[in-house]
Length: 398
Image 1 (cartoon, rainbow, N blue to C red):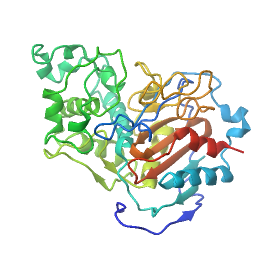
Image 2: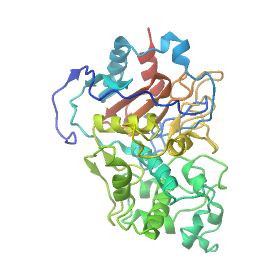
Image 3: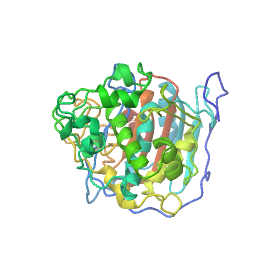
Image 4: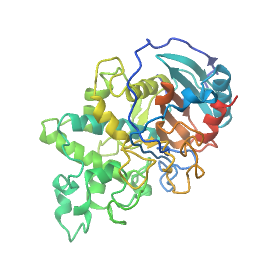
């Protein structure tokens, strides 16, 4: 696999049956409130000084399968072509649609092909949702309400780190800890050599923990420090990325082309991955099938389901994932669907249980439980005019 660093030939193909058909998973219990995108093209926090990148949230709900009641939400060949046209016009290089066990659409544009592995920026965050689920199942994390200071003991010094003793793991995972984001210093192009040490020593508490949603990289890096120290206490000394590979990605057969590290050798947790569309599709199927992509559980389903519980301030964001909850919003509180909409900021007209991992330029993977479908969209552009709602409006238009 290669990163796109030079023009590649344009492919346009529809592929049926790339993957082996699998039995349908149980419905994911999520709330009918929309999500935001973990990395919106119009909201991209992967950029150092801009918070325009991601969002999500859920709860249990009845009657969420809107597509069965509304034939206008059926995925059709014509709709997929329209959506891919829209994506390509907005700088997209790949659109894949997988449904009911097989790839039903695969198209490459703007010099991309099946081996093109762009930097997916904040779509990387979705991998750490799975990391959180595995850490809980394995007993590394036993209580989301555990104060972070129990692991980052440096924060027990209240004179140096005032107020941080109130931050919990739950608040980190719902992006509501109140910590500063410091985009310019610890964004995708960091200005510090050791990001992990920086978030231990230099982040400020700018809001009361638990009260407000703040999208950005800092809370993911704090989570990485917590996870790294818990792994070390359990005897695993190779760091969180090596553990993620061994525990989750390798068992599902997923490989990435590259992963950014800081000058101290720490992996970029929120925004480091480069991978192609088919590899990202594997991860989407893993999430759709609730941790068991091939009927053999890598993570038990209840721990995946819990990722879609929005118990933070933004009903559009669960634990490291965006959700299309009508009551939620994207990176900005103004990025939401109109009042009374059946869907959220990702798609106003429905699919309230859809969730996603999204990155700069709108690289991302969308999971549609109502449709038993996963959609991957990739770009090499940092900033595009791609809007999720417009993409899905083209997909489902008659």
